[in-house]
Length: 240
Ligand code: UDP
Image 1 (tube, helix red, strand yellow):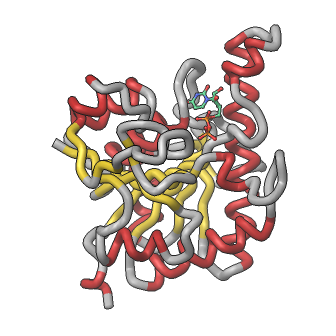
Image 2: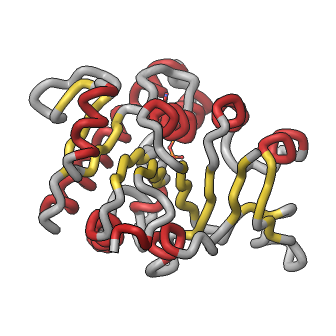
Image 3: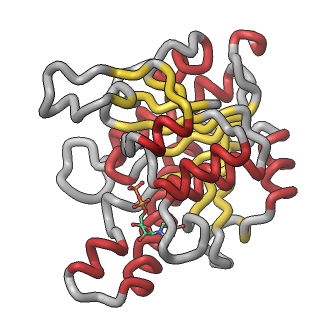
């Protein structure tokens, strides 16, 4: 069954908003359970899964700063939000009997399993544990997309998978433009030149410099994650 998957090791990025489900804010346990099920299917076919979860369902530094808070403090709050989401996801995965480690970029002994350590992370992945990389890059002024790309490159993932609410990358906003065209493939330079909003520019530059492919797909469709690994047919692939 192992050979079914195109990829041996992936870095999956979930946005914080993906966890809200029907709720306007926070975490919907039903969504966590569904994601745990889909991630469990990957583990079942022998795929090694690293996970980065955003924090936008709780706090974003930029939004807090617009409301008057200090930006760096806001970003610290955003990174702590990713830790909360990561703990919730670990809980859901472990309830589904999937061994999971949370590694935080900010040391947080007693709450997460480990401070981020690349070699340890790779050892856990090789054992078949899901590794959740929490607290973003550990630095303000970055995003969890950048964290996902950074960790993906560090752990030698075969691909970064960015789960979103839309089916891929379009030349215009498909919710506003009915004729918007979806890219099935996209080069890094095209994404940068046309400012397609795949990810922030820091993240795109990072994957471009290291030749890390990124696939953007819609995780609201049940089974999409397995389809990406087995069929590679979902969404948009950004690569050379
Ligand atoms: N953040 C940060 N450094 C990082 C990653 C995240 O400061 O390396 C903060 C930033 O304030 C960001 C928030 O954490 O807005 C939540 O992350 P993000 O907006 O990427 O979450 P998502 O949109 O994926 O839910």
